[in-house]
Image 1 (cartoon, rainbow, N blue to C red):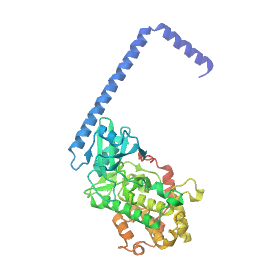
Image 2 (image 1 turned 60 degrees about the vertical axis):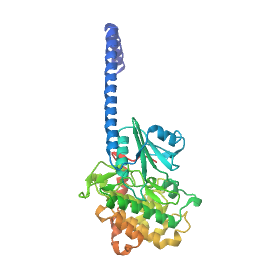
Image 3 (image 1 turned 180 degrees about the horizontal axis):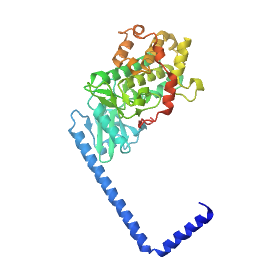
Image 4 (image 1 turned 135 degrees about the vertical axis):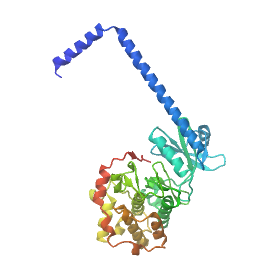
Length: 386
């Protein structure tokens, strides 16, 4: 639009405003405001109705954990004064129940995906119990408030320990080995021992919590998916965290083997003390899988081991064996990955690693494809930062 046209447009607009009675604009604004009020009322009524149905549904579910009121949790957390951290959908606060037990209270914020995550978490983990799964003690679903109450884990999340370059805080080999086995046991229970197979879909160090004795427990089931015992796979929207997501997510047809893949990535991160995708590294070393394959071909896998831990080198044979199991878990083809119960047996020594790894298992590693996948993936439901 040139200058003359713009000037003409302004003049015509002013003339229209002078000609048309001001009462017309007042009536129009009043009508718009009225429609806005009606829409707001309908939305709030719908939201209230949905919440009432949701709350009634939770009340009628069997085997549910304790239901708290919002006021009770305000008292438990001393008005949410001691913040432990932030999750993808809200903040986490430390609290103490009247019984004296310490808890972690996650206060969810938002609508839509938040409500879905809340319902999934309550339904999934509310009625199951295993030592290597974080216990959901209770919840609050009151008006717009959604809170989850978990057992308190004194040593926080795994990422705070394995990505920390402070040698004084570096985890020793025995603790790392135990953490890896704990995670494997938790996932094996979800995949095989529940009434319905539970696929976590967001396994990463931030979702592995450590108690005061460094027992590891899988947490955060907000993105999880139930699969019937008679189902071998399920179609679902893409969800998870880039860098930990298996390549079959591109087809949205997944099995429990997506958790096996994520587990393999986490194992490599624990052993190497670095993230799978690390932008601080040289370009050729940024992707851990590519670096792993290169070091495997060179016969130099111990070069990858976390240098902050003094006793990793002295346990080289065990470390390399665990690296090979991790490599088996991150095979590009999901059918080639082991099940989590098999992984547990491998780590416990009841099944021989060498006898179960095909000689060409390294050929199933395609880090170049993984790098491309990590860069282009745009999940419909991404896990937020921790």
